[in-house]
Length: 136
View 1 (tube, one colour):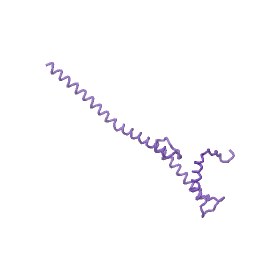
View 2 (cartoon, helix red, strand yellow):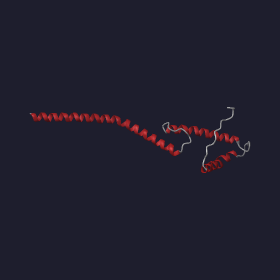
View 3 (cartoon, helix red, strand yellow):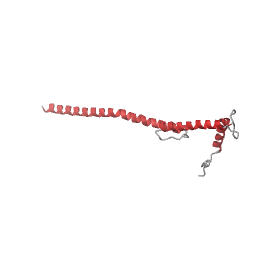
View 4 (cartoon, rainbow, N blue to C red):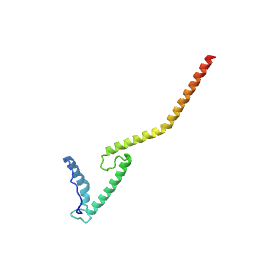
């Protein structure tokens, strides 16, 4: 390391993806970079860029926390496709519902088993009484 940032080469993208990058830059970032009423450096509004990047950084960190929480710690990267996060959220929700249902039913299941045992005992007593009456 010579004090210079360690840049990674950009991954290859399709022409369609490049067109989307160009559109996003032209529609969102270019007006910020070329914003008037600021001291431009190399034709860019550096202060506006710093503010925008700070906001972006905040959003990325906060979205990561939400993704992590709603997916049961399975997803935390902010660049997941929304449908994937929603799918994981719904899966986590179903798991939580199933767990809560099982917890709610467990005591009832025990009570039902106790009632079945009591019915069996009563049936046995009844059979015994009937058998004893027949013997008399």
